[in-house]
Length: 215
Length: 215
Image (cartoon, rainbow over all chains, first blue to last red; front, side, top):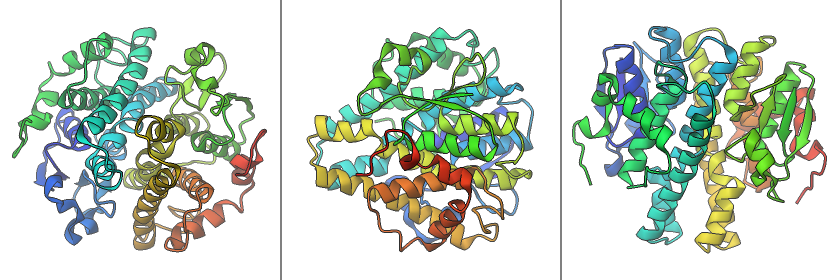
């Protein structure tokens, strides 16, 4: 498979983890979001939304949106499964994944930070406060679920990693980039620590990718 | 089933459409987001994220996150299906749904508008510009997919409504609330017009719910 991504992209990170968990070989082409390569006409023809990731499986058409790609990978490469079998369990895993992939991550991506700065003239400290606020809101919701529900195990749902863990690992890494305080969310961060005992998560980490720069 | 929702909530609207399409009987309990009822301890115990919708199927636990609920409904009540059968087609439908449910809607919900106003002191015209900007960005991406891809039919993917249509209908209704210009997006709005020929969409419309107020 051929992945279009960027080292800093948390959505690309999610897809990379899933590819690694399923041992699917892939090559990654860099779309440098900091240089605006996502807006080049060539990439727009791959993904009209001008965002990463996009994934080619064979001749295409390209797959888009990280959660849709994760489900596709799980349907086409069922082992190891990233969703439990039972419908209610699947809903819980998807719901946990979506708390961060839908309600946190889209609020902190570069296009939002740029709009806050360029259009609304919000300064850097206030932008950082915005980012941390939404990470913390997401962490609070996820922690309440994980700490309060019997289905939580070594991972978010039982003792094997699921889509929820993939997304929560990307959440925690993003929160760490922006120096959010992890201490109020011990269950979440305990599970993320379990994730990073697995090579599939470690190798997918943003800072392990070509061109990565710790800030 | 028992749905916790609010007339204005586009995410509740999505779940209502799916329940209607599948002819699943449900009762809706109002969580008045304008009065802050989502933050009451009673509702927090239903949904720790303090957002709507939440859905009870029997004795619970409550289901949360609208896209996860839509998938649950499709898995437990397969007819009529809201996803095609083939993996690549399912990925396209989910991807289209997520462009708006993940990358537009979370940017314009009340908690964001409140933060922009209360924390960042952004005035109402600039808030409205923010809202329209993100609706338009989403519409542009969705239009590019729908207008450029052979799979588009009477609906987003072929000739039956799918999860993508459910989400795109909510997108269009949201855009209309905020008086976004629909004319640059004819394919999108043509499909939405097809959706609103179906009673399941019409009955689910925010302005048809108890307490609804056109602004």
